[in-house]
Length: 180
Image 1 (cartoon, rainbow, N blue to C red):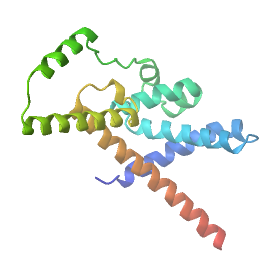
Image 2: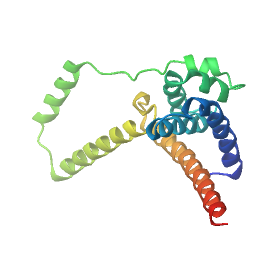
Image 3: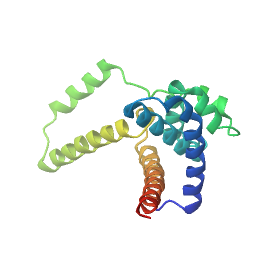
């Protein structure tokens, strides 16, 4: 699934708007502060493309709003910025520890065949990988459904591809200008 040219154009417009907003505050700062401001404006632009329809975009909007509320409000103008910034992500339900321990003891008592052992090992690997995915995707820790997590991850990857493609084309244009 490749990002469309309209996504790239929209991202570029939003990102440029964000950079214009943060520019006065980063003119006389060090490289790390500039890098942080550029990343923040790119994140806000990327999240605004989805208009808060995905969990990862809402998580990025909320995170960015804590860092630079004015930037978020300006880039999200016309997309119900207040509701997206103030919308709380629901925590996933955590089981009580005693119930989990009890269920583990019951499963240990049963002897397993080789195929059951392989299936249990595969489940552990999948669980470990989905936990890793939850930590990488913004808002992933709030997704209890693995199918939703995969859908959000795919959407996030497409948005990241858009971001990379736009940034790469900007670098290519700048290098072509320097060579002239």
